[in-house]
Length: 422
Ligand code: ADP
Ligand code: MG
Ligand code: ZN
Image (cartoon, rainbow, N blue to C red):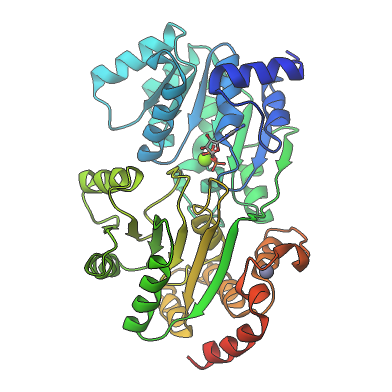
C-alpha cells in the first residue's frame, strides 16, 4: 500500500490531531505501512510512539507492541485511548490482568476491534498466547525500548532476547519495527542481529537536544551539595524536576531535606510498594509535588513534558544512562537544566560494586565508567562530547553557551583542578 503524503497527514490529523510530522516520522510510518522491517533510533522525546501507533491504526489487524514495563504500558494505552472514541482500540496484556480481563481483551482482538496490543515479552512466551496469536490477524510487531535486547544497553532484559523465537513460534511473516533512543553502534548491531531483521531500513535522528543545558559540579561535602541544589531549584520559576541518586536511603534523606526547605518532594525507588510508587508518579504528573528523588527505577517512558531540571546527585554509571535520564528534561522544547555532581570517590564506590561481578561484566562496567569520568572532567564542550559518543559530529559554535564549558570556559579550567583534587 503506497500512501500519498497528503493522505498520511490527514490520518495524522484524524487520529492524533497533529498538523505536522516531527523529524522523520513520516518516512518511518511509510516504511512500516509498506510492510518492511524498520529500525528507528530517535532520542527520548523525539516521538517514537507515533511511528508505530499511526500505522497500527491505519492497517488491518492488531499490532503487537512489545514494551518492558507494566507502568509504561498503562501510560501508553491511556494516552492512545485519549485520542480515540473506543477504548477497545488499545489494550495491554500482562500479569496484572485477571483471567476474565484477559479473555475480554482477546475477544476484542478476535473481533477486530483492537489495533494496538501492548504486551510484555514474558506474557508473549506463554503457550496459550502463542497459539492465540497464530490464529488472529497481526499487522506487525513493534519492539519498543529495543535496547533492552542488548547487554550493552542501559536496561538489559534477558526475556527481550527471546522475542525472535516467539515470533517464529507464532509462525507468521510479520514485519518488525524496533525503536530505541540508544545510539551506540554495539547496541544497534545487537538489536538487528538478535531480532534477525531483514533488509531493515535505518532511520537515525540527531541526538542533539538544543534546549538542554549541561553542567557538572564537583561534589563536595553533603550539606554543601544539598545547599547548592536547593539554591538552584529555588532560583527557577517552575520547579518541576527529578533528582537521581544511587542509594534508596538517599532518596528519603534528600526528599526530606527538600520538604523542610519548602520544595515539595517525594522519594521513589524499587523498594517501595507498587501502590506508593503509582501514587508518587501521579502526584508528580498532577503537580501536587515538584520533585521526585529517585533511584534509576523511575522515569522510563513517563511523559511529563515540562520537567525543568534533572539533577544527578550521584554520577550515573554510564554516559548512556546519563543521556537517557537527562533526556527527560525539557520535552516541551523549553529550557531544561541537567546538573550532575561528580567526585572521584563516587567512581571508586561504583568500582567496588563491580568487584564481585563476572569478568566480562566487570570489564564492560569499567569501560563505561572511564567514559563518564572523561565526560565529567572535560573542559571541552559537553554537548560535543555527548554527541561524539553517539557517533555524531558537532561544532562547539552551535552549543551557544548551553553547557558550562561553553558558558564559562575560564571557570571550567579552575573547577577541573578542584575535581581532580577532590
Ligand atoms: P519517545 O518515545 O521518542 O520518547 P514519545 O513518543 O513519548 O517520544 O513522544 C514525545 C512527545 O511528542 C509526546 O508528548 C507526543 O505526543 C509528542 N508528539 C509526537 N509526535 C508528534 C507530532 N507529530 N506533533 C506534535 N507532537 C508530537
Ligand atoms: Mg517511547
Ligand atoms: Zn558546549
